[in-house]
Length: 374
Image (tube, rainbow, N blue to C red; front, side, top):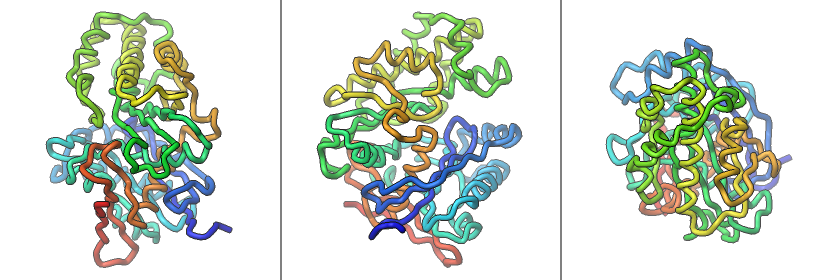
């Protein structure tokens, strides 16, 4: 039986790696983690992945019916398997230009609520962008709860290596995540996406399993130096990236062998993290790595060689690195429903702490928009 104020929420995440939908249940009141529930994974079939890949970079108003059908079908199938009181639906990010056209996550949360017969919180990023934020990353407030859950006593880092890398610096000595100095979060640069794209283009494989190809190659310093000249690395955080913001990385390794290209792209991701450490208010006691990149031994070896702190997968502290992002959107859904902040100046650069999202209930005439500036 859940405690007072605790509900079971179910989060879903379909990331920029385009591999599938993660779903994970979390018992929470939106402030603390009371327990972890079941989780699941619904992979995309090759034709589904191709439909999503063809939609990347596109905006509302364009013909996205094929991609939206994939997103909705996969999420309905994945979310129907686990009971919960509330669902957090991130959707599929197709384009992200917070200082330009905004941010676009494909998927209809109201239709999902009808299909599931459960309330759904969705469109998490738009309110943050409207208030001057980057709209990403959104997991940091959950990372703060994770730091409390593992009883951390000193600043630490959560590094998510998905299609794009992002870093959360957490000071668990604060009581609230939105307190000044509690959090700093920002994208570090590309992570798995360029390597995945290289593998698909050259070998027809979705990713470099266990870093096997990168291990056979050598890092080409000239390409790495050109990569670090990107203006993104000279911007102060908070800052965020679109999946294809570094599309010319592939051109930088275009003349290299498959193995050297994979090694160099992997080194670029690790070097982006090293550059990011310059922005941390104080050195983290340890770096906990989540996302698919933690399964790449070459990536992890490069990070351990570059950083001045222990680098470990989040499993080292009893967390689930495959499901942390899905859990985050379960946690954020409860916060939206209760009017608690989902982002703050230290996480996205938004002008004030904001609880932003849309709560859709099954059979409701109109969704209830939620966007409370705190």
